[in-house]
Structures are given as structure tokens and as C-alpha cells.
Image (cartoon, rainbow, N blue to C red; front, top):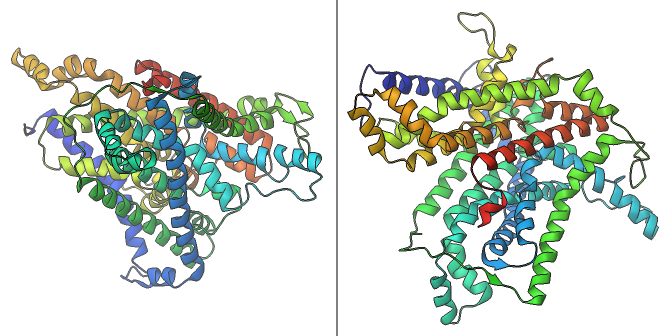
Length: 557
């Protein structure tokens, strides 16, 4: 059906597109305008010529590409293996491992890298023990370099691959694999030729998110001393505020990050669309029991993975309560004073995080739920573009969004005569734009499960469109809406890449506080904030699963 004119639905449609135009399309357009113009505002390609003829920037570009590909490879090996074990096989402690595998989801990336540094750094627990036990004269460099970035990204992001392939893997018809085995294809060949191709749509979406996330992350490399990456250079060039040429190159790099994200999304969608992944029927897969040797191998692999996943959380917790932790395996004293400093003496980090993330969720609900309804229930013009823009918003790096907002809204508004970047409301807005796709997708998937005939029946007995939506539609889809909103909150409160550029004094959120405390050398205060953030994320994830009527482990069947 088409949206009628001069109705609340039509007005809402216009308001949604106005929001998207002002807070998504305009900032991205502005950053491209700045990238393709000079100081006088004239069109030029000189900025890009300078980038592609600068050896350091080119090295940063290729390093970013290699790191992104490496992260996809490592997370794929770990994530697909975990999903395959949990879906296809029965072994001891399987249910426990299905819960523990989701631990990285409550570990914000910034907190994760700090935790790894506390445990695996040059003066961390592992190196201290190795030097004590084996008389090593120099610590082993586990963290400072590309290997440290790759370790952090792998541990944090492998659940994206696991969750992305999980549904597809559980629906692969066992008869297809059995037929392949009957033809002589066993083990790896059967997985490569039959199972993996059928998982492609889910796998590609997960791999794309891993690549873009790694490609755009600048905080993890900065903490472990890596600067020759694109996202890091974008951040450093923008925040220096001295050399206008370098500042302009930061904008050029941000524009490239957006272009590359768009290209990656289009290539992924094109690759998936050229093949057919449909099946006539799905059978419930009965998990097979592993033999003694393979059972021990599976339990050992998952135990090692869980140990590595828990390591950064233990490191942050020890640093938050420890005093005198220098060249010793564990802190010499334990105290709660650092929690007192960051929660009672300076509560702004916690208050701001909850306030801004909560307001962002309200914006996501106000914009995202109507968007989902338009996409699922109407044939309104621009519906496909709205869907594509939602996907793109999930892929655009936070670094580029933050820089785009600086360029787009750093001027006085016509009526209020004040720049939006000088008002704290810009933080909830940028968080809402970053996390809107979660609310849209959660609402959209629930709306697809509600047959339109229920809404038509309500209209046939005299209920208007708005009343039908509130009385019929919302009660039937509230779980999907709430789960999407909670995921928006969970990811908003962890957001650092976009908000670091826009934060002024008094607006600091928890990730900003962690970053600034650590840079200033106050590692215990940074760790205390990290523990608080982990607790909030864990509570949010728990509520998501309770509301969704399932357990995290229940996702695995």
C-alpha cells in the first residue's frame, strides 16, 4: 500500500527523511566537499594526489588492508570452528561453553586492549613470571605492534562470525553433506565444497563487519603504539589543530574510509547475490557425539579460547583494585579507592554515559520503529533507499562519522546562533545515528512475523492508522523493538571512535574517561571505569536475553 497524503503517516515519512538527510547525508556530503576542495572552496584533486603520492600514507593504507584481512582470517578460523562445534557436536560442558563464548560481547574494545596490556605487556603478569621462571633478560613483546592489534581484534570480534554463521549452519540440510560423503568427499573437502558455500550469506555479513571494524579502529592501535594505519592517521591529523594541511589530510583519509566502507558493502552484497543459497527444506540437525580424542581436543580448544577471552577482564579487574602493581605478577595491595574516585568524586563519566546513551535510544525508537514499519508495510517511494542507507550506517566507520560531524555542525545555527558542536546534545545524536540500524533491524524482523491481516482487521472495525499501530502492532512486536533498543544502548555506551572527536569539558562518557586516564598515566582509574563499563554491558546483555525469551547459550540450540 502507498502512504496517503496529508496524514500522520505521510508527515512521519517526511520527518524521518529529514532526520536522515540532516544527520546522515549532510555530514557525509560535507566531508566529501572538504576533501575535494581547497582553502578557497575550489574543486581540486590535489588532496588525493598528495595522499596517493605520500609513502607513509600509502603504507598506512596497505597496513590497514592487511590488518583487516588478517582479522577476517583469524576470526573466521575461531568463529566458524566454535559455531561448528556447538551446532554439530555433543561433548562435555557444551552448554557452559555456549555461554562463555559470548563473553567478548560484554568487553568493550578499549577495555579489552587495556586488559591485555596489563597481563601481556612488557611489565605485565606473563612477562614477569617468564623472567622469574626462565631468567629471561628481556620481556617478550606480545602486545606492542601489529600482533597486539590483531590479538585484541580477534578476541573481541570472533563472536560476530560465530553469530553470523550460526543460523545458516543450523539450517544446512544434513542430507546434502551425507550425499557428499557418499560420493567420497570427507572432512575438510566436504566442509569446503558443501557446508561453507551454504553458509556464505551469513558468513559474508559477519566477515564484512569484522573487516570494517578493524579497518576503522584507531584506539586499539594507539594504545599498543601502532600509528601507520589509516584510522589512526585520520585521528592524529584531526586532533593536532595546528597544521591546516595535515588537518585537511585527516579529512581526506576520513572520506576514503567512507568510500572504502561503501565499496566493501557493495562488493559483499554483489558476491552474495550472484549465487543461490535456497533449500527445499530444513531438517533438525541431531548433534553427533565425538570420540574420546576429538572430545578432549574440542574441550581443550574451547577452554583455551575462554581463558584468552577472560584474560583482559581479569587484567582490568586487578588493575582497578590493585596498588603497587609494577614488575610483580599481581598487585601488592588491594583497594577500592579508584572506584570511589571515578564514581563518587567524578560521577560525570557514568551519569553522562547513561544519559546520552538513553537519549540516543529514545531517538532510535522515534526514528527506527517508524522506519521499520515503512520498510515492512508500505510501498512508499524511497523505501529501498532507506533500507540501503540503514545498512550503510552500520558500515560507516565511527572515525569518519565523528570527523564529518565536526565539519558539518561547527557553525552557528540560523535561529539559535550557536554551533551544534558546542551543545552536548550532539553526542546523543551521533550515538543515535551510529546505532539506529540495530533498532531498525530488531523492529523490522519482528514486523515480518506479524501478518498484515491483523492490522487490516483493526482498521475494518474503525481504528485509525495510529491507533492500529499502538493497539495492535506494538503489542505484537514489542520484544523485537525492545531487544533492538537494548542492543543500541549496549553499543552506544561502548562507543568511543565517534564521540572522542566531539567531547568537550563536562561531557565526558566512560570510554572517553578510560582513554584520557590511560593516556595521562592513571591506569588504575582507567581500569576502574573499565570494570564499571563491563558491568553495565553485562547487565544490558542479560536483559536482552531475558526479554528475548532465550539465553545466550540458547542461541546454539
